[in-house]
Length: 483
Image (cartoon, rainbow, N blue to C red; front, top):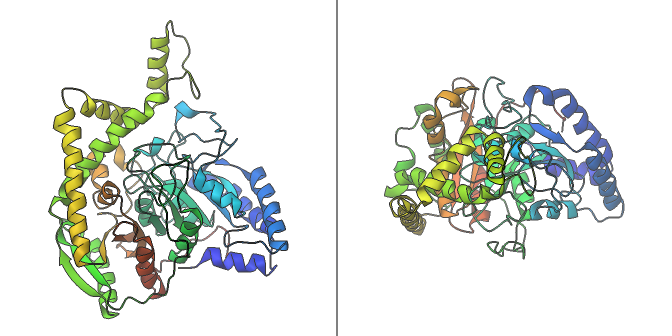
């Protein structure tokens, strides 16, 4: 896979092209191709050109950093001062925040160039990005297939070369699963490694901002730029000050394989993942079998906790303070009811109702409290596994990209597609998805590498080996900006 960020950065600093020229090239392909893919829901071309001019000034003065002048995109739930941020929901129609999310602010300070906001499942609730009020984004590798979700627009934009990289959010796999479906790299950092300030909340104890990129090297560069403690987010944590090192040497690395991740798995996906594991073993890594017995409970634990937190977080959308407000009402109560009924889509309504139910006085102990207890058990089992191994290898998803419209009549199977990714969020661990082949239909398969808390560098280090050895190579998408 091509290191787009470092390649473009060298060209910019060697004066082979300017950031303004590069930005105009991206704008041109977005205008031509986004109609077919629907990756972008709001473009910010005027802002991008101003930022590109500033980036060229930084480069001329010798103050360039790794991301200076590189055009990128943000998921539509990451706040941007004065720019539309709607979570792809009717209820936030026309909403423009008055501040920047910390992750975006850090990128701006490096001279990044924002091309626009990308499509997503409404309020990040979904696994296909089809719950977006703007309509579904399409998978650039097969336009009849979904991109995955909820960061599907960002994955599509990177895959189609309509952005050098994207920031998404990962609550239960929402960076990694679309990266797997589109055949790009998606990295979910340790919970707290990247500030959540300015990320519009879905499940506050699960959400984490992470990069979607063309390569592992690119993911490491973006991660280094956005990580670290933030006084605006009390859950954020200190991270190492030195840049993430990648050299691809895996001799002596202990790789854990938990059989629970592979139970009932599609044979094509199992074969692709096992093939990748074999390559690590041939290079000197040690393969260790481990067990995580409560892994099967992670999915119900996730949906109970996520929906409970969503029910609380989305209570603020009442039509009074900002966003959409219904018309023709006779009382405040009726206005709030009509606003929420008309403003939220069916999937969001479903999760709010489920969350309200599990938090209610008669069912709190039976559902929410039990889920929290099980969450601690699952964390304990992962901790025991990492006492035996350095990293865990698993499939990113038990399937490749669904057909568009599939989730409409197969909601349960769509929820089950998160079975391999949600345990990572439940435990607050770092994980990356990298391509490791295709199925017989040519659809990408994702390999997931999971680390212990704050082993982010180790996860990226191990993933780089697969990239260096050519295990991540997929056919390039036609169109987009040529690097």
